Amino acid sequence: MSAIPVCPLCSMENTYPDAENFVCADCGHEWPMVATAAAEEGEAVVKDVNGTVLQDGDAVVLIKDLKVKGSSITLKQGTKVKSIRLVGGDHEVDCRMDAGNFMLKACFLKKA
Image (cartoon, rainbow, N blue to C red; front, side, top):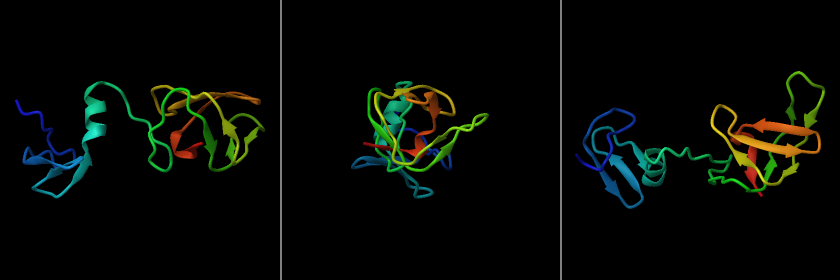
């Protein structure tokens, strides 16, 4: 069995490594080796809005105002959140703020 994965786009096996990416010779799709290696280990890679990989304990900043469902609370843009915790599911980041405990999506966060 080859260690090179099949193309996630077209599912063809005609792929090859090129620097830090895998490339599909059939459709031309490129994807990073690092994300594939982490996915094979069973760990999900969580990235912020700029593509920076987030880890447990990182500090992040909100990039836009977020309204909390079922409440009148609004989390303001620019709020810094310390010591995040990564969890599985739709909302990847678990954090504690002055207003309470929240689960946030990584697409609304920027690493501080």
